Length: 270
Length: 269
Ligand SMILES: Nc1ncnc2c1ncn2[C@@H]1O[C@H](COP(=O)(O)OP(=O)(O)O)[C@@H](O)[C@H]1O
Ligand SMILES: [Mg+2]
Image (tube, rainbow over all chains, first blue to last red; front, side):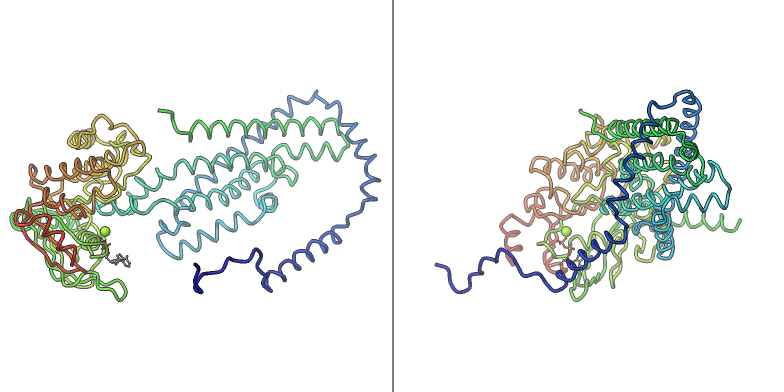
């Protein structure tokens, strides 16, 4: 028989705390304010429907006579993405080593590296693009720099996390046999992180391709500017071709990236 | 100029002192004290090993075995006491000299602690990291011929040459531990420390590892100090058995004078 010391069955529901009630009320308040603030107007939407239809109608059939030009532009956009990613990845390696608690040479270096990575990541790419268009001028180089900074924010963070997650005990074993810090980094930490690095790099390439197609909207090179011109001059059929081309590029890059990931990271069946 | 001359002097001095003192006791610890917070983990521990002898370290969990072993290559700094290895005062050594000394002490852990994505040959090659620049002992593909061949022969000595090209994450626990021993052999050590080297292996693999360590000590004159919870292993593979209780030595006898019953009594205390 159960004695008086038996712990009772917990109740099905516990009363929410005051903080939780306040949080729930706050969330609902935020949603209702946002819906009012966003000028949601069913009337504007319904009135806009015929125009949407007109634009769509004008888009088809897409105009294919400028397809070769668009192809060249698309390839340029892709090169911009690859160049920016490469640059960003190269800078990310040393930065991530400084931004990982386990490998940083100094506490101050760590704080600075962390701050740099956060800044690169939290400022949106279009803002970086505007900054570089103003400083280095309109064109693809501004786009390359934008993508490099964007990549830095992404790779810097995930490289550093993966470095911090490596197990400590093999490190101690290498220290015990007389290996120095740099030797341990080179022989243990970097080889152990390689799969995760490859994964991160492939993701950031996909991300770079997606953002490279819109950077042109603010003058940072690539195919985006063509799209803007076509839309502004009501050449919807040409805009459609460009949109389909962008879609094809993104899909192809994602497919290749997925396959590369599988080929490089999956266990060999042996 | 003077710098270079100084360096050469240090080196020869280092080598001389290493050679002259190996004859006697290659490993001595004296009055070691170590606290973690309020807990005295090593309490005035003094121990001196004979060259070429195999010593087993017994003691229940928390008695300070790992702390003692880690203190020897200065992975942990004690609060007081001294450690002398191959005639060197370990605790006063810094950077280059410390690495140099560590490179002569093999250390095998309970977990093999290999780099899982690199193959057995490269992991073995890493044993040379303490005595050469890391570029030469980084990957087997770019290592100089003589180091590569040395690493291979270390793998042969632990009977794993056939798996040299395999990534170590695909090896069994016992095989991995043998690679760890090969890596220690690559150091060309005079002393081998082993912290419960068979605790995570099945009995058969454990026997194999203990035999290997014992034969290294016997045939190559390597001084061996290993901790274990296997009383049979201590009796069978050690010349001498040292028992720790709360960081103090309470038992220290040749294994020939001990039997399983007396060791059980030691644990019973
Ligand atoms: N880094 C550490 N920090 C705090 N306490 C530790 C640390 N390392 C070991 N200890 C404590 O010291 C005692 C001895 O540990 P250890 O040397 O690992 O014993 P053993 O290897 O004999 O089991 C244990 O009580 C352990 O909790
Ligand atoms: Mg232990």
